[in-house]
Length: 108
Image 1 (cartoon, one colour):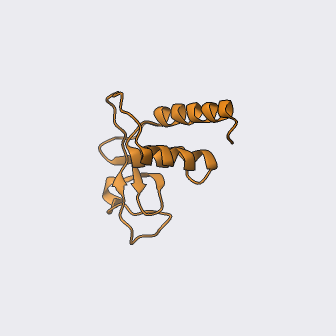
Image 2 (tube, rainbow, N blue to C red):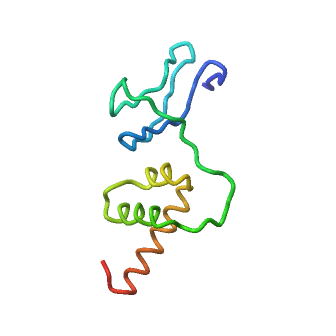
């Protein structure tokens, strides 16, 4: 059964408070303002999207710090993507390169 896109919503949202990515699937008639399911109804969220334009942008020290946190397991790749505005593929590629460089240097 195909859903009618005029009566149903399927949108990704991101909570800046707890860095949680989630989707809302509901009828438009039932839709209220989106809130984080992790934080509760009192926390508003933003629509999630990454840049579609492929740009060769250099990585800042803040972004590299997020990659370090990703490697340590403190945050997830989609959280880094949402914070930096980069694609998941870009995040995963940079993480692999940083890991490879650390292995060559003997740094864990």
